[in-house]
Image (cartoon, rainbow, N blue to C red; front, side):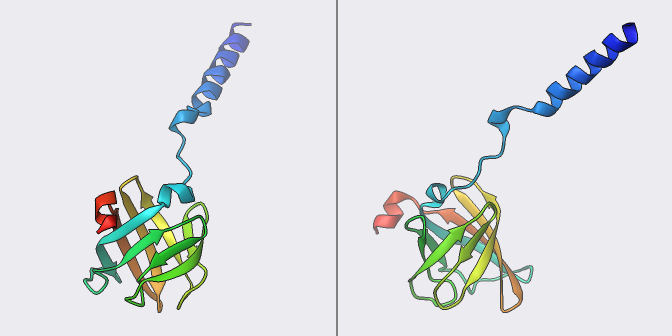
Length: 133
């Protein structure tokens, strides 16, 4: 009888420890969390720092529209789709997929391939004052 109680106690502890705390679960990224302008802080091209993208920005306007100057140099509004870990650019001069490597309220790190060359983009959320200028 002691063994059965011991086994049940151990199983109960195991189940409680596996349940976890729902408040600690990773937050799912939504379009509303992306809303606003993100400006490039730094970038790598094929693993090496690059300055050719220095003026790059992304501006998430709505749940389906964003503006960027990546690849064109000029502001271009494009359609996009957000999934759990990717942003798919669906229109514009080129369609591509950005993998979200890291996200916080002030930083966004994306990786992508352009002409089979890997890029990593480290973006910073622009403040409201910066957006008005």
